[in-house]
Length: 147
Image 1 (spheres, rainbow, N blue to C red):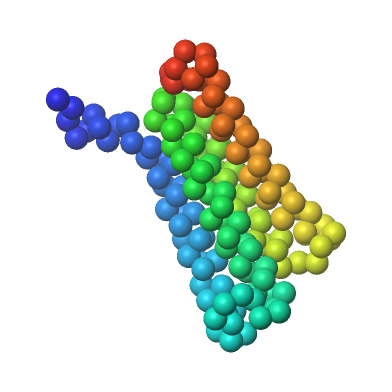
Image 2: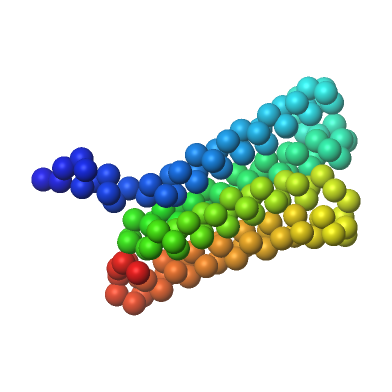
């Protein structure tokens, strides 16, 4: 029978730590949407407000990408990936999710837009693909074995 200590060693503790930080960012994005809905008196939709529309999309974009990438990183961590690899993956996710909403509030085709929004999404899509390919390669090459 496994002890609690043995079970805890297999939990994705690095991923969990980053998820706590990402949850705080998600809460901030949520509060921003609520604040803008109140000031625009918009119970539903965006009431034609470009700022509210950007806040809604930044919030939704976070919710669309963070769960699946974090889940894949957790699987990679639990399969024995090095701590450095997990920190790099989750660190990149955190950076991309900080950059993206900053780019949602600037004019398109500006340097800040390209760095923040485009850069944030590029990193996010790269992580999505890298994690999926890592998991598939481990499965196809004989199971999820430590790296």
